[in-house]
Length: 289
Ligand SMILES: Nc1ncnc2c1ncn2[C@@H]1O[C@H](COP(=O)(O)OP(=O)(O)OP(=O)(O)O)[C@@H](O)[C@H]1O
Image (cartoon, rainbow, N blue to C red; front, side, top):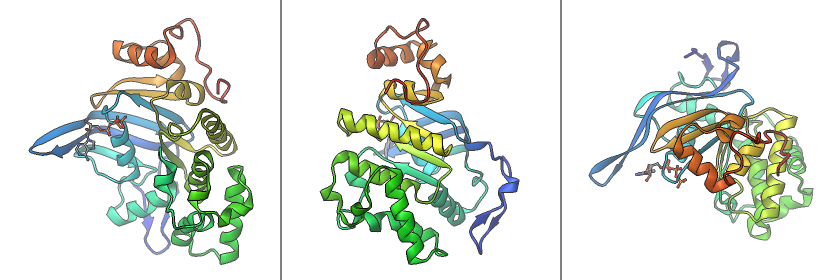
């Protein structure tokens, strides 16, 4: 792992020292949870790399360990064994690492209304990360960035004064995406970001994510049960089973030509059996959305 210098006075990482091509690196990572008087092995010796700008889909049946990887990457939990390095912060101490991850990794979860404070207007929600992490910005500069953030997700400026309860599910998820992007992150953790939305909002949010990726290449860890989404908009797919990475490679190969029966069953259940081998998956650009 590359060593990174961290300036505690400015909060800046000396990026000249870190591997700019690597957004996420998990090496031989094992994670157990304590459940009553027994241990649950959630991840077993997992290796995973997400390069800068790469969109990786993480798929697997319920309980296979997908969200555990998301939590490790966000720094919400630690590994029992192995190395977790996110954007070169792996060698930083606890507080510095947490601060860097909060600044440089955005996240969008399944339920937008759980992620937004119902008592906070949209404008305040979007301004909050800037107030915390960008103390150099004036009030006017923050207000301008909030307006720009809303525009970037296709919402009018007037939404600053709305409360979450006055938004549709799709609009609320757009606000969550805008919030995740406020600090211009290098990595987004997207944990089922569209599965709580109706079909139209799903398509709109996925198109929005693709457009944002085209405008600025942010790496994605995209956790999904929906293999059509993985197929349409990701570069790489990793398949987890009982905490073990059983397949990993370009999305077009993993979904088009799965090696394990397990992945084949997942794909058949989500996409039907017609895709394998004969039909290339329409990866990137959102063509199939
Ligand atoms: N806080 C916890 N305490 C105990 N066990 C946990 C905890 N969190 C997760 N687990 C267990 O770890 C395993 C992996 O869980 P995880 O949430 O990572 O799976 P997942 O693939 O994200 O599932 P889903 O698709 O249902 O969200 C499961 O067996 C789960 O029951």
